[in-house]
Image (tube, rainbow, N blue to C red; front, side, top):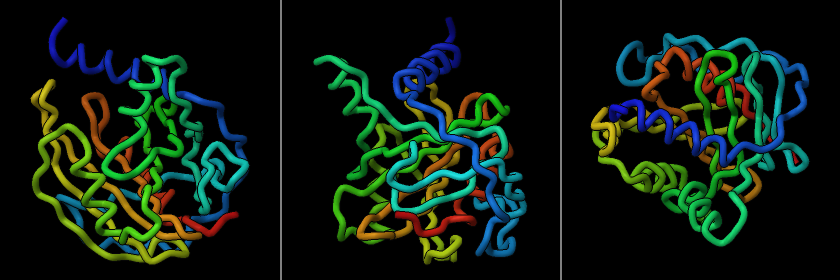
Length: 220
């Protein structure tokens, strides 16, 4: 089995460990507060349009137990992150659910619709700034990163900071582009992250990410 195949299999097994329950599909309204395209092409690709909405998630009783709600792309589903059980599994789960001072709260899965997935993380410190949370998150993975860029923008009902960077996976020896956006709500700093992968392109993942961040709203 070649390197790319091993990485793809490893990624599939990891995602299987983290799968939880699906969110109910509730029709979502039009995404609000999204900025007009500003920077076409590398690295932001603002010309990539938001996906069509097919539901919504967020709030304490949802599979994404966070103090914001956001629209889901059609065919994408929200799943709670549930670490594996058992002593060894708990150690593995810790490695998969903690990153750069954040803890993953849920995953939005679009693989059945031909896309990838995005994840929502909560900063462990309630006082961390948006930019600091993004910097720690990006450097928290076991990857070599480069080309970090930041911008401030409006994301739905929130002031937000967005970061993009390139990461090189040591196992696959392949470079991918990542995007993440941070907002603050109800005393929490939240990071919404998405990236290209071995089997996904930016056009697979950015439409759902654009829809989610442009439709962010406060939730209990």
